[in-house]
Image (tube, rainbow, N blue to C red; front, side, top):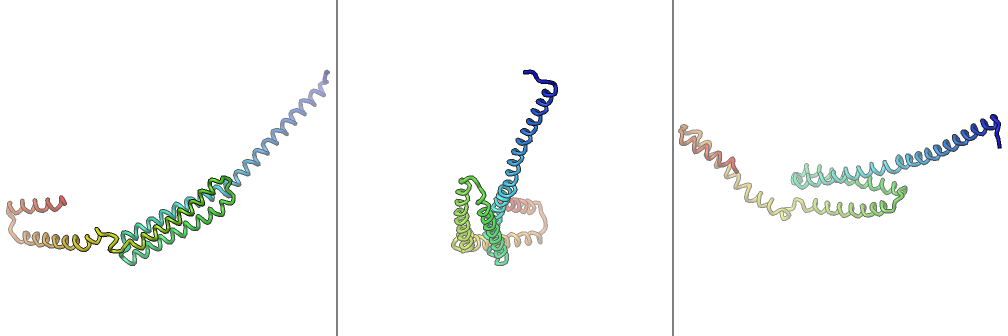
Length: 194
């Protein structure tokens, strides 16, 4: 079968048009799937990551608030500030968990849903532990070493500092001799080592 030039051109042009149509169709299908992935990324994945970062920030804030309360909470004003900071951190954590619960409806892997369920349980236990720590943080019986420091070491240290100050004042009134300078130098060197 022989084709005329006209038929050959028509056949060649038709095959090019069919290939262009097929390539266009493939590109359209691929772009649709990319668009679908982009929508999922913008609507689900990105907000999930942001909620995870908010959880991390909330955890750090509650820990910092509790740490501050443990260290400085015996002062009522500072203690209330740290308690408020910790409460704000828990508010952020609850909001982030709520956002993750909403977003989890669009998650496709069942493992992530199990992780979220475990995360809720862990946060409940974590909050309970922090509450217990806050309640016992400044009880005198909780920190025997701290109580010993306040009752025994601090008054003794005050007496030692007063005696040293008195000795330095006494030496200041006496004339400076080589022996006195050497004794004072040894005395101060001994204090600075401790």
